[in-house]
Image (cartoon, rainbow, N blue to C red):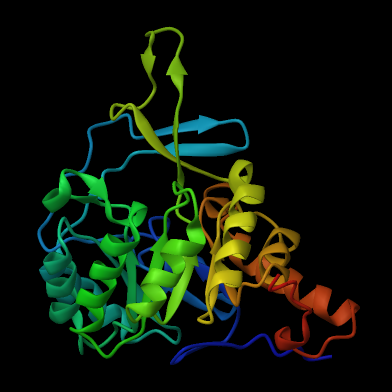
Length: 304
């Protein structure tokens, strides 16, 4: 039985529901190592307008059922992306969205303008977990007005799909989700990493040089499923689930919770074939249940 796994998210059609999450696949150099037929799409590592050195090591610390990272958004800047990576993306048979970052709404808009129309760039995923230097270092994603201003700045500078990656570090994710939807977002990615800390009991200091880092991995999955579900209930645009997916069953939880697709990241550090395993496991579940397509999968989205 052939299962139709294709997904439509706004103007993007994915051949399958499993994407590579930002920050875990660099700018695509890891793609040749994958079973590409199972890859629905990819989100690049985050970029700024200018190159960034990132944080000094140590940058990664393993935790029970998870991982802390504080890379500091190291990257080559937009010119290198246009020159070195986008031409490769243009030859691939799946879409690549660019994760964009800035310290002001204007910087986000400028990035979108610089990348708009570049062959190989299929759309944008806005990272609103960056400090807003114009408002004293507050994160854009913590305030609905700031999140909306960034989304609007990008929306005005491109006709490409605009996704917004939501931070989990808020009291009501639905408020942020509705704000960016109203500002023109085509879809949401839910959610980014949680902020955490781990202590080195030999050095008596944090394990990461930056002290805190983003917690990813299966430890956060139930939290991420809940937040993605809350976001999906709050908006009419598609939601892409992210956070701790290791198995097909993990991905199916997000899909049943209302997500249109999912992104896999940390799992690939443990198993380079994780994306293929998740994709094929979703197909096997659908076949076992007698569903002919992903669209037939029941979704739990009460509107009470």
